[in-house]
Image (cartoon, rainbow, N blue to C red; front, side, top):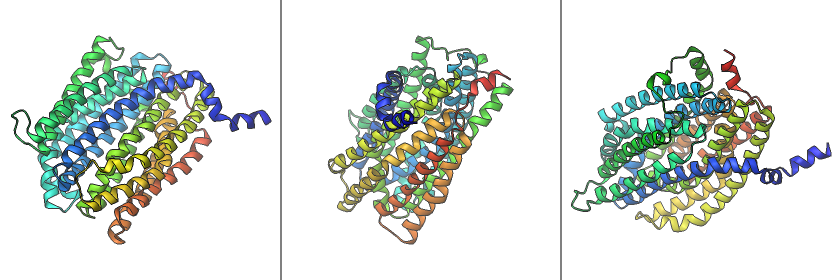
Length: 466
């Protein structure tokens, strides 16, 4: 008993002594975090460049991207579901089913992206009216959305390939593709937004054109690189056959709740923006600017979450359940440490960060306070995310994840946003704190589910047995 207590007390020390765990986490988490960080850098540069056009431009593009946010969460749901299965099959050396999972992922994601793109292309102004009543913001956002939606199918296909590559341990190709795509995006942003090198001044439309070009380039480069590497996921279309009855059944049980989870979580969090948008352009500009810095630091635990779902999935697929359980506890400790460090970093960076924007003193003051609020809730958000996206999903406990995410958003976050922002008319930083209180709920209830151990399952054996 004393030995067990001692092991629990010194879990952080044990984690850092476990070289295999640290090596595997760093091998996956660092490239994933770096790739995500690079994408956030593009969003950051976009926001800064568009910020030169004024608060209304920031608000319009920020709200237009909320539609993309809902779309990308649908893709993330498909990506997460396919990644869970692919990581377990990789642990079981089942290449055949990994390719079929890729086929299902591509079919669903491309179909979904075409639907989202079509709606945005046909009626961008109607979509913008959902988020704001500002005519100027609607006009600017619709102009941006009507062009950038062309990139959605390319983004969807790239993300599914990236998810499967990570599951089979190929983490370098996505980073290389992202680096070159980001360079293309930033250069075209500068040229097209401000009309450099003889090009016309296109403003927010220029930013949209740059994004489309970069996403097409990234998709093509990704396919070329994995073909050169002769990755096991490159195969004929026939081997991508997504219509295996057993696999569809397994996918439905494991991945469908993830897709539903991410989509309706995205819809719920988008409603936050509906509330913020009705608080005025200054409020939505404050949130948009705050998010630019937040996103750069969120990558710190997103990498851990992806690494966790892959590592735990590999171990459970190989039937090493005790090892998966131990690694799950390590992920909790590592996430807490990273979360506290990132909170401190936000507090340090918030003042020099706001000086990059040409906005009113009121917006600057609000941004500083929003960042203080986010710094306080950051460790809760980090732990909740890694537990749900990394630990619980790794063993297919996706219904519990669905309950945790949707109850937090729809029963806490959305009511808080509308009651605080539109009924009581609190300032934006107070409403933001009310919304983020849902992360505390997810952390506490999620920990209870984690301790029950129902996520420890070998899904690869279940399919092989059929």
